[in-house]
Image 1 (cartoon, rainbow, N blue to C red):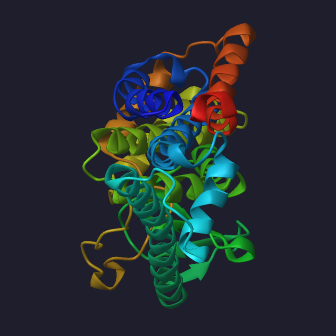
Image 2 (spheres, rainbow, N blue to C red):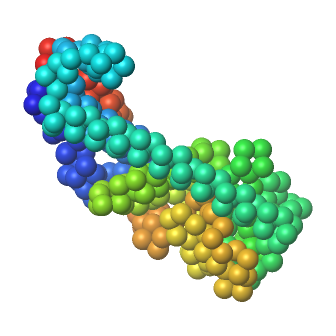
Image 3 (cartoon, rainbow, N blue to C red):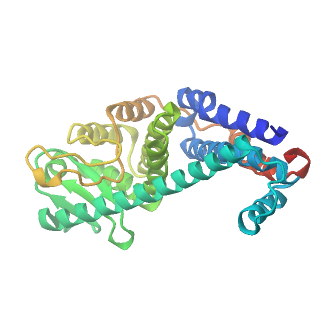
Length: 324
């Protein structure tokens, strides 16, 4: 096996198990959720690149000293029936595995996207029938339900925030302002795209425990980012009360909005931003015991680490001295 393949395999192994586990257990992400979000994305991208790259470089190593040269040699074998050039069974197996894994990840990403789009379209159709526009809040619709419910439904120019009449009656004007700012931040920062990617990662590699850890952590981080935006317009006590009231209503799972107790028509409709009781508890604890953001120097170090996670596997894939 080439040195590059060994190095990439080691990186892939580290990013598949110990690194995500340690990151999910760390306490600092709640202090700087945006930085932690960048690091999680780097871990996912670098892990996939290293996993596929390790198999690819091992399979192509007999054909050249650079990835481009080896790829040209493989094209010559496939298209022009050139000599095998030292390729044996395990090289072909590694190339096949790399191709299948790459195709599986891309296919799962697209399939997850199509499923979410289909569910959101159905959800929007149901909202058209079961909700009415809010007279006081633009871009907001009200559903006639006593349970306190608040969420957002992305859709470009058609994005809306959905509130239940029960929630509006429970919240004070300041609490309602905090909820609307929170949900509007999800839409403005396009958190649904992050959820899509990490949901696809979990679907593609369900046997990998860290894919579940990553999705849970990202769910918490996007809620904290939205809370930080809400804190610019309301105080901590107000936001805590609104979170407690909203969480007492209909619960959401990580991918879909479940059936409303009295409205079967809601079944299987997608909710773009979701949270569990664990996430709610983490949010409230963070607000009750606020801590300052990480010092700028530490934030820069974490961003540097995220950049290196992406740079190192890419560099090893193009360094000619290590491929052979």
